[in-house]
Structures are given as structure tokens and as C-alpha cells.
Amino acid sequence: MPNNLSGLAKELRKRSTDSEKLLWRHLRLGQLEGLKFRRQQPIDNYIVDFVCFKKRIIIEVDGGYHSEEKEKDGKRDNYLRRQGFEVLRFWNNEVLTNIEGVLEMIRGHCLKHPPHNPLLSSASLRPSR
Image (tube, rainbow, N blue to C red; front, top):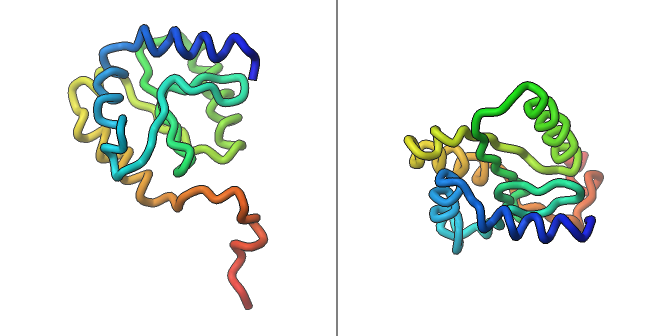
């Protein structure tokens, strides 16, 4: 991880949007199913809005943006998915006007994903014959 990403992540935490602040109030301190989330977290060459490493779930809160940003987000999401993360995206206004619905969607995704265990290989997950 490049050194400047940690500093940028810290700066982004200071400049959170209203929707990010609202969602963080509900995610912090294990308030969602006891899971630990981090905000503005560097992962490789990217900074994600929120991540739960135990469940390998990333949450992004988006404002309005142009098509080139949408294309960059798509490439970024594909990269993160290849690293084993599920990426959930919500619009700012969706978080601000329907926080309970957003939390319910996040909760549903968290409950359907077993905890990540890096010690298990994909071969050990195959059913026995």
C-alpha cells in the first residue's frame, strides 16, 4: 500500500459526507450484528468507504458522478471482487432517506456470508464423496 493512501484515508475520514456520517453511526462499535467495520480503509491501491474484513463486505456510499467515474468504480469493484470482497453500493440520498432499509440490506448480506477464514483453502470446502 503506498504511504500516501493512509494519509488520504485519514483526511477522508475528517471530510465525511452527511450520508457517510449517518451510516457510520449505525456501523461503528459492532452495532450491526456485532460486526466490526472500518471506514475509509485502504485496501491495496484503493480506499473503500466501509469494510467488514470478517465478512469480506465493502460498502460504498455514492453521490452523483459522471460516466468516467462510473467506469473507474466498475474496474475498482471488479478488482475488489477478485480479492474476495462483495461490494455493496448505495446512493447518498438512499442512506439519508431510508437508513433502516439500507441497514437491512447490509444485514442480509452479512448474514448470508460465512466469516472469512484465510486458513481454509477452496479444496477443503469441497463436499466429501
